[in-house]
Image 1 (cartoon, rainbow, N blue to C red):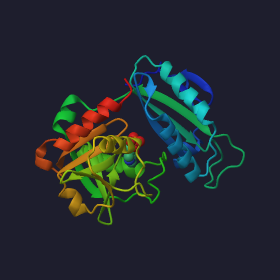
Image 2 (tube, helix red, strand yellow):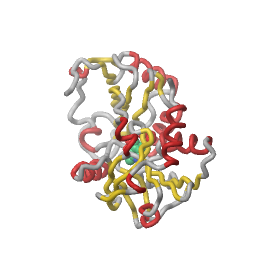
Image 3 (cartoon, helix red, strand yellow):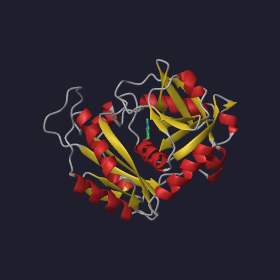
Length: 283
Ligand SMILES: Cc1ncc(COP(=O)(O)O)c(C=O)c1O
């Protein structure tokens, strides 16, 4: 259900969701010509905001769209929108599109970008999902080659996620040319013989802020870590597989393509890192 009273931000104003209106000619609507961020907020404190704003700048640079705000302005807007919500833990979404113009693929000149922000309750995994792990399906990664940019053109990811939903799973883990990339809305990490293995942050995956947070707590816990490419065979023979994202935090995978994975229960390294991750969150 949409909450039409929810306060959102659109182009300089805080308004009720039902009053937030954009043109059908917005390039976000017509082309998916925009970028976005999702910032988790715990107890009204944004988690790793500088890192989210740095990734936003990288996405804007990647699509050649000037940043409409300074870091200080973004920081103030994010905190103000969070303050206006009646709940403490939030998933704050912000997007910037190339604005409203006559339909033409080429960039329009002199058009202000559209800036939209909303914040919803943070949909963290259930206790059962944390304790028992979750199911994934696998597929060939057929998205474009700039998966490092967090663009609103998400049709590839949408179709992958639906494969998971159709199979009663929570995520679709993807492989490109025989190597693990990521999942439709999360990064994927593995454990083999007590070592955490993470695919490198190249142009084929989104550089997840939670991926970095998970690797930081892994290092701090003294767990050995390798950042390197992983083949499909190696990934499917790992002892543990984890998903990481702002709304999943870190979550164990215990079923892959309908069969139990890693003994069908979250592994010991996951439990250690999950506990350390919980301790590192703002209270
Ligand atoms: C494709 C993809 N990969 C990875 C992630 C995880 O990124 P983060 O940890 O910053 O939420 C996301 C987040 O939604 C995503 O959409």
